[in-house]
Image (cartoon, rainbow, N blue to C red; front, side, top):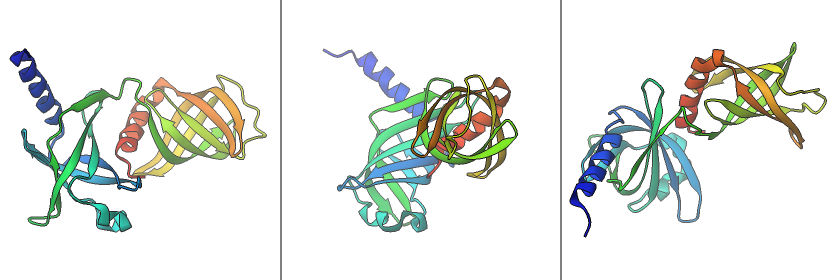
Length: 227
């Protein structure tokens, strides 16, 4: 026989985690069509009724394109939202669309989730992304792309950098000129490893402690990025 107290604790924990998402918080909706086409769109968390449903704003139709025609009851959705706090964390849950309503505005009604996960950004969480950047090595600037990022470091592709002479522990500066409203973000880092690839040189880099604040800002935007 199951322990009723354990069930109560599970429900309380679920609601506690979901309640960390405040109304008006930006969330990402990750959806898949029956044919396997994936779409990732920004939305706004509206609220929820315990054990019944979760409400999120219908994504901007101008950014959904033909994907909008697949939005229908039963479609699976992964919702991720950022919690603002001392360290920052991500709330995530998997649900299905119950219905879309038009009044008072376009809203997606989701089934109430069975599980809500909470992951602190200070952990080993690594996020796949595509962030264009410039990388300063010595006194030269190179076009580059951040392909994934965590609070401690990232993978960085240096475009056409095959002629670079790179060694571990070499200091570099990564400049993000414009990403999701962030302007001229500068991250101090050191090279941990490098390898030649077809598109250039792939670096594994470690962020310096002095860039902690800037890295956190970038990581927050990467979590909710629709790109």
